[in-house]
Image 1 (cartoon, chains in turn yellow, blue):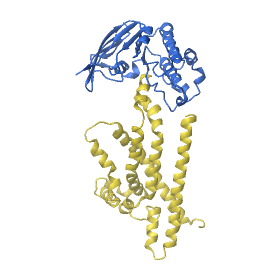
Image 2 (cartoon, each protein chain N blue to C red):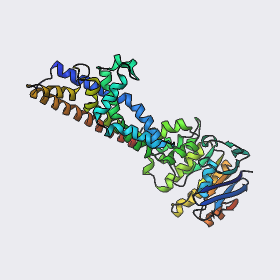
Image 3 (cartoon, one colour):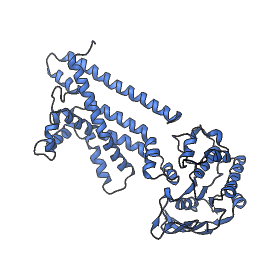
Image 4 (cartoon, each protein chain N blue to C red):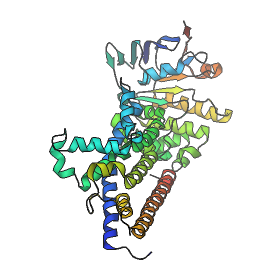
Length: 227
Length: 203
């Protein structure tokens, strides 16, 4: 496999941009929902939980179609249609929504794993709820937070069904790696391109996993040797 | 009056009820396990809300008549039975957690013989070391009173004696009122200025 063409670089760069923006935008939302599910006690919690996890089990094409209906002119979010439809921002929205359930699940588990007796101890030492959150809860749930983020990013990179339904397959705008592979396979002479792009997507995924493993190791080391 | 408690709380099928008035020094709560001794300490610290009653320490109203001071403003130096050191920071940071800028960390470390542990991680400490660090952390948070839950449980005799000495030191030198829980009657008799029995009411 020789050097990448400018077009292939463009696809990789677009995929990374869509995946990063999706993950970064979804992270605070995922954390808030995870917190609510882990700590909140309110009626209808099961319903919220079900709705959040829905994109995990509904066919992605359905999620994409709902997004399209929502953002199309005349839809409830139609005023945003110019900035979203057929654009990379729309691809990010689709990827973020598909990644959200995985992130919520991982982060929720890590919040639930925090020993609440330590939070009580911090309160008696004079720390208010916000300081307890910053100095006890957040650092202790950091490994799960990181795992959830990497999982969400990986899911974003692989997003296909919701994206192609919602924002179509526009080269340079919404054509991320999976969509480019699909487009190549539609062409009679596309096998070689599809092979190169497939190898590329494996390389990107592998790099993300290795990076997260290195980060996790460094964080574990930081937990042991000083924060 | 150092401690003036009148609390009741239903927990499962047990009812915890206690009336206690005690002066300065060490007040020891004794009673069988399951009597709710730890729950009483939690209520005084603000970590457990009584169903009814009032809590006053050193003349300061902490709970009652619609008042419920949050734990961070009760100035309780609470030494939990399981130490509860923060596992993600070293001993020094644990000690500093509730301490003011000019807290005398060295003095307290000296008093409790933990100066050599400051750079250690909590999980590397023995039970007795962890307990003494927990006492130091509570003392450094500028408490108005101390709550000690089984301070010598799980310690061998030598270590238990050290902790008992430290408790008496705190009583005499720092003059902090202490409310302490133990199941060890001999220890209660050794340390108590006031001894209070607590029995569970099962319904």
